[in-house]
Length: 323
Image 1 (tube, rainbow, N blue to C red):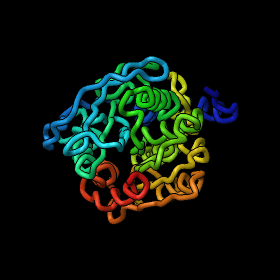
Image 2: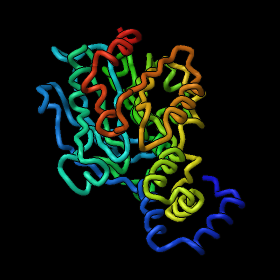
Image 3: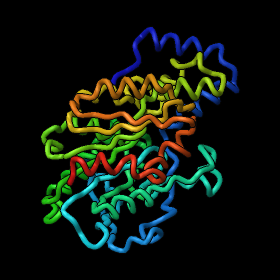
Image 4: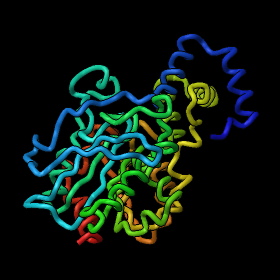
């Protein structure tokens, strides 16, 4: 990983001399976003009436064990597979903010990914979904930190290699549903191993985000927006990546498959529409669409739940390339 530029580091060290104890606590708390809170599996496919599913354990590219589910299409296994991943600090079942603290400290809402698997299986797709490292029931790695794609690309690669080696799944047509941190990770994986993803038909890419935009928005909400350099220093001291390294902008040009990007237009937790539009513009795909979620500022409540509520806005794109 790269270090901070010298001028930025010097500014951070100067900020340390004058920052108040309370503001420094806020800065450290912002850095701690990359030490993900583990969400528990608050639902299984049984909760939405899916019976054809099994637990799977998949090795990441670096050997980290990833826990997941394989769910067959309604009526029996089809010849079409969607590989589905998740955001920080979620897991394959979604996010249990409605269970109270500590999850409600992010947002006191439920995010239900299992309902989204139901939409996919009802439409004739098998689903392979997994907990990214340091999330859900998957193993810890990298000191328990998230690189927002800088380490997690290895999980995307490991899962695709597992699919390609599987006696049945390897024969299926494959699409991706890769969101937020999982989307950043997928872009990075495609950049490193384009040959591995050359046969992927399409990708739905909700809520991918640059951490610099997250930190700018969150620090403004907390009144410490003048300390971006110090946030980077605290990230570096933790053993993580600085904000500028944790962005899909670095890898988007390597993504050439058809993409449907989904973003909250007025997301209060990031800097949209600017950040999302920049990522979209950088995509190497000739065939790409950008779906803006409007009339809300709520990333968790309305962004990640959008497919669950409005499958008719997502499924036609997948069907176009998978059927």
